[in-house]
Amino acid sequence: MRGNTIRLAAALVLLVAASAWAAASLWLSLEKDGIHDPRSPAIAILQQPAEALEPLPRDTAGNMVNWVKAIDSGAINPRTNVLPETVVRLREDDIIVSKFGSMPAVKFPHRAHTLWLDCANCHERLFKSKIGANRLSMMAILNGEQCGLCHGAVAFPLTECNRCHSVPNASLRAPRPVP
Amino acid sequence: MRRALLLLALAAAFAPAVPLAEYGDVVLDKRSTPNGVRPVVFPHWFHRIRFRCKVCHQELGFAMRAGANDVLMADILDGKFCGMCHNDRIAWGADRCDLCHSGKPGVPAGIVGGAQTSGPGRW
Image 1 (tube, each protein chain N blue to C red):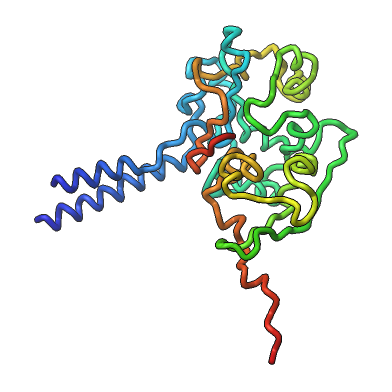
Image 2 (image 1 turned 90 degrees about the horizontal axis):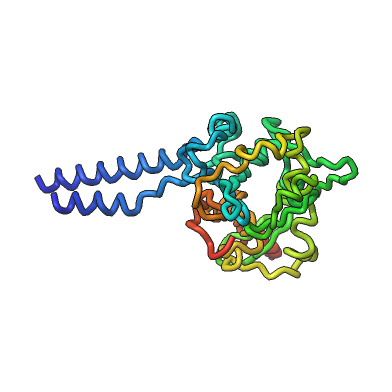
């Protein structure tokens, strides 16, 4: 009897957690999102998140949209500039940082970042453009500084550790010379 | 039974909260409420489908920090900030007050998109 009760309770716990998770993964409509005034005349005119985001490549966090894939797949092609004289800059190299720590090293892809951002958004104030010149700190990042200026606010959130910490440290060590 | 109730209560306490607003939504209210209009809701998701970050954060000069930009209607009408596009040519013009000033009265300013880290000290 007691065993049955526990089993039932466990099932209910799973059900509650699953339904909460499912609810969290949906896009709320504007009138229910807690920040729009449901009585505003804008509600009937503005585009709803579900309508705009549903056709885009899925992700598991943030807007539930893989925004880099959205550009790469051609699903969207956001404008790169509004001023005709603006030089659109793209850089394609990867930088490996935070090597040999307790976490896998971080691969910073310039391409995914310059697809969206200009060099000057990060350089030289936020990050120096010199390998080794930046003291990165997870504490600062969690505090909305450095990478955390965007990651956790508009870019994929800081719960996605392994998307940045993606390079096994072992793969960075020089191979042992063959005896 | 008591244990079942306890487990249920625990589940309710630790279940992920349903996020309010879309990830990256910004409420701007430096000047709206004091001037008797609704706060502005800026949806990042809507804009980034159409423009890359660099357009607003480089060409238009919006600082990448909620609260760091002092956006005046006079500047917008002058073609600065939002007014670079919201001019009836690229997007609706500044005469469509309600479309941007659509926030719930009293909603606090800042990024409110339910960052899944439950929030750092400062955005």
